[in-house]
Length: 337
Length: 261
Image (cartoon, rainbow over all chains, first blue to last red; front, side, top):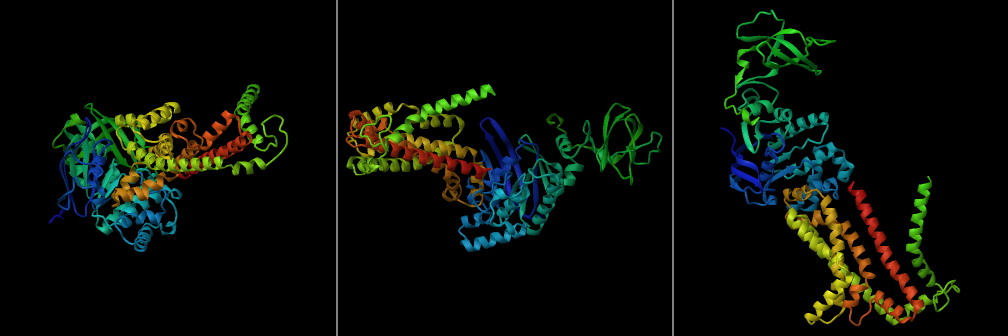
């Protein structure tokens, strides 16, 4: 049996003046999920998060938290906590005071609150800095304080608004793993906003893809990548070859010599390499097929010691892919792209 | 290089023009002669003692301090609340309200003074300590408001949201987040307001009735040509009471600016 719903949005509409931020949103997040809201900026994902946190009120629709409608409940009365994009640490308070803030606001005695806060700081390996102010920390450290400050309250749901956006790539990857582990260990439901498809795919149990104030598709990373419901999803999640309503992912294609035999269950098209870009782990090829279609191909650089590109522009090739790799996009709305 | 030295010459000339009179008045306070005259006749400190023992001067000093403290206190409360209210308004309303709040400082003091005097007369309010305070509060509020709203403009909105998110109600957020974040700008505004109130003449002449604040006493004494050595001493005191708060205010703003970075 699937876990119970913990957050539910039903027919939620939100506009700012004439601008419609959310058209009519239905969303269901189950207890214990790592659920990601993915989309370009202005697609409504942050508005959705702010509605759940209570910073915004919907024009119409219901927002259920543990089955109770909280659409009109002030943020401080909701048992959810947020990790803000800019961290929003209180600059005049020390780290331990920052982390104890939520406990103190809910009337926990000071000594006990500071005790809990120190434990939470230790969990993110910042207990040695408990007496410092946020200005004395690096970006990555601030990020972890923001996380500790939210988690110490043991929220029913943790809302994260592009929490890794300001970090450099290496730190980002490290924090992605830490966040995923934290979510797994605590079992707290995470709702995570990002515009980064890699981040969404690597961390989430399920993802909702947003576009223009609507959800295009909800599904597991596999479902979104392998069976996108629309051209928009196919294009936003990963790179893609889109022909009419057919999708072929670039890494499913192999480039062989022009006269190579075609095994059963494969489809083959002749073509000419137009572009070859070496990216370290992979090489991206642009191929012009004989029938005039452009094909993008991603190839892992598996040679033990490559000195140059395997294929260069001008080379004739045979593009080969398994028949079932080419999938029909179920409800194609290419006009949206 | 030549044009640069010309510029410095011009700057020096302007500074001398601005501050030489002030310096001369301060020097006169130490003059032995009963009438200010150049060159200074000799050095003496007894004018300070005489001035301090003058009951009228003491009463005026006390009144000036009481008025400045009360007007500043009112300005701290009203200016801060006004700034917080305006900061959360939408753009169109914000501009109108902000203009109305700023207006008193743009209006000539003589207009404010006349209008207040007429208004108090209409309401049959006798001119008193409180009418002076009300007059001063009109511009003191603006000074605090201006300082606080500048701070609020730089504060990220997410701090207040974070506080609410962590379970704090509006009062807790005000007490633990907004007030501490605004404190140095309220303080800086209050010091400026105090200095402005302390040396205000025009609005005070219309709202003071029979009482004298220190600047009014100076004004009266000069007009009658009496007690001129004491005037120099009092002027010296007024300069201190205005310059020191302004300097402290600058320091407060500077420190807060550094802390924010």
